[in-house]
Length: 179
Image 1 (cartoon, rainbow, N blue to C red):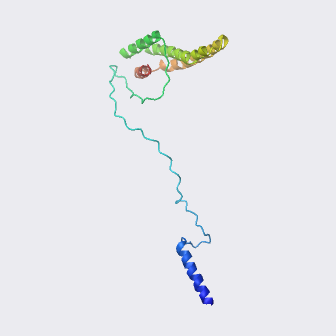
Image 2 (image 1 turned 60 degrees about the vertical axis):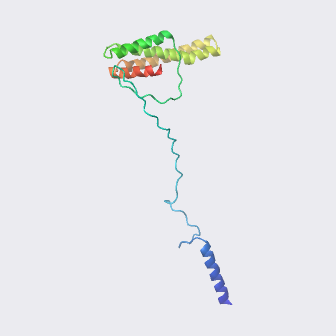
Image 3 (image 1 turned 60 degrees about the horizontal axis):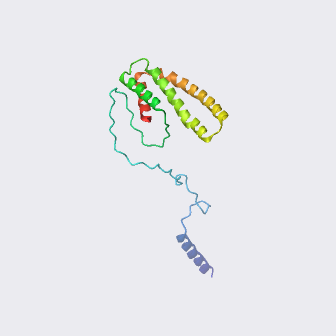
């Protein structure tokens, strides 16, 4: 009888072993996964935009370095007066016609200051006027904005007047692209 129980136990163990995965020589029934076998989830790759054919860009007569057009992205631009628009074109045309003239840096710095003032007025003061916040609030905002414009303009002027003709042409091209 002992042999019959032993043979039954032996055949049951063989059937169980065939169904279960092979055990290692360790005492643990579940073998932990090795570090090399554990895979970290892969980061998603950003979607690649379809390639656009290159756009031919005409080189300006002034031989200024031409930056390729940036892809269309969201933008917020402002409207300014026709007089400022005409002044902008006049300054840029004079710079492009004679890039070596020594006073172009000052003229461009003055133009940038006027564009900053017009932009700040359009984005901030116009909204306050439309919201009808009151005279005192408007004047307080105008004083704060005036201080900010003076600070930004003084820093810009220091950089712009020190630029060489090629750098001034790059700034002029950027202003043209904005307009």
